[in-house]
Image (tube, rainbow, N blue to C red; front, side):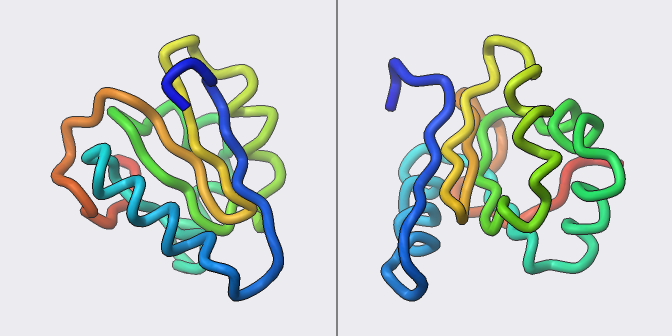
Length: 107
């Protein structure tokens, strides 16, 4: 994944996509966001570009398919943005957050 700026993990329900995304986030010291969280979803859905722009370091966006407008925002993001995007998640490199930390982008 180090040579691929965007990765999407897609698969059937209950096959371990979220577990894999959380494991990768922990190993890389990335922040973890889930769009199952109503506040995180509201931020991502109301301003997809702002949501992506305000992420710092690396992160995983779980359940990204719930806010499809995030995909163009990721595509247009700066070259240093490198998400892991399962139909459950997205990640960026060079995180300053603690491993496995769940959070919301600054608002």
